[in-house]
Amino acid sequence: MDFRVEKVLPNGLGRVGTIRTAHGEIKTPAFMAVGTQGHVRFLSAEDLRGIGAQAMLSNGFHLRRRSHEIAEAGGLAEWKPTESFSSEHDVDSSRRHGRVASSSSVVTSGDSRKENSVGLRPDNLSAEPWRGPTLTDSGGFQVMSLGSGLGKVVSMEKERGVVNTAHKERLAQVREEGVSFIDPFDHEPEFIGPEESMQIQCRIGADIHMAFDELTSLADTYEYNIEAMERTERWALRSLREHIKHRDDLGYRQNLYGVLQGGRWEDLRRQTARNLAKMEVDGIGFDGFGLGGAFLKEDLGEILRWCNEELPMDKPRHLLGLSHPDDILIGAEMGADTFDCVAPMREARHGKIYTRDGNYNLRKMADSGEVLEPGCDCATCRAGWTRGSLRALWRSGDTEKKQKYYNLASTHNLRFIVRLTEEVRQAMLDDNFAEYKCEFLARYYAGR
Ligand SMILES: [Zn+2]
Image (cartoon, rainbow, N blue to C red):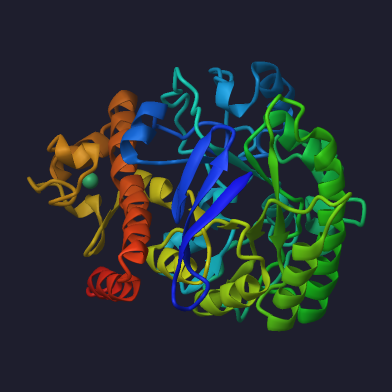
């Protein structure tokens, strides 16, 4: 995979670049649309192109049982999900989306790793697959959500008071070989280790894969983070070894990112960054790096700085599962190149609309004749859909109308975040990123 850095911020970390994959280019910084099950809910490939999305992120864990079928189709970019698609592996319910359900000050990298059903199916399955660049996550998040975080609000409001689920109650048990778990839908016992995760991801055939990792929770101690991080590094080596065997199986090159854990500790973050940066099998190293973990929002910038000061400049970095505007601005400033998160679309389905002046809920907009956001360049706002008319679709008992609402509102929120990354890129190229960031945040958070 080719990655070219075109410009670097004065802090030596943030940068503008281009990632080239077998299925096209990603101009960075960039936000990836989340299609957990292999397609983006309520948005067609054409909608995504209109929004300016450059890549899609899917989940290897959720697609594991369809991976043979996907390989037969020629990989994710050729695969058309059928109506037999269901939410059978939605292990995460909306109750657990603490961060997006509140104005929490806590960040959990991994929002991309969970997408819940809204109780409607099938949604508008695209007749045409997303043929552009794709990425799959390894399933590391599910290790936590079925294990230490089972039944918990994964993104905790506060560090204090967070406790892990007792070992005997967990649906997933982590061992050196991998993770044994009980499928939450059919209650069958299963096992995924680094080798299985690589085989699954190489059959799904996204352009970029994540090494198998263990995401720790905010409740885990420093000592446990050392243990988990060292295991994640051993899994990273096994992932790399297995990946090399299968990365060309579908006739094009699939790439592997090593995933950094280490919680909120500087020594662990720097150490694991150095270890993964030099890790090689037969002279082949990682093609890029995934920045993972659960941490307090106020720590995000520092943690990214520690990691990215150690990682090589010429490899791309993906920040897993964060999409609030301040997270993206800090992430891009500190050297993250790509982002993903299901929040813009999930929040749209819950009536939460993003604007430059902060967010609002459509619930209170029954009589509004205004568009979602005056001046917005998304297809929904350009077509003149008003807040009142969208609210009526949303609250309608009619499935088709509701789905129309999901399409229109998702289009607006996703465009909002994609446009933010486009503007960040342009501001960096124009040497005015610092001013842009300041102005954006002052306006966005003015109402708080
Ligand atoms: Zn709009």
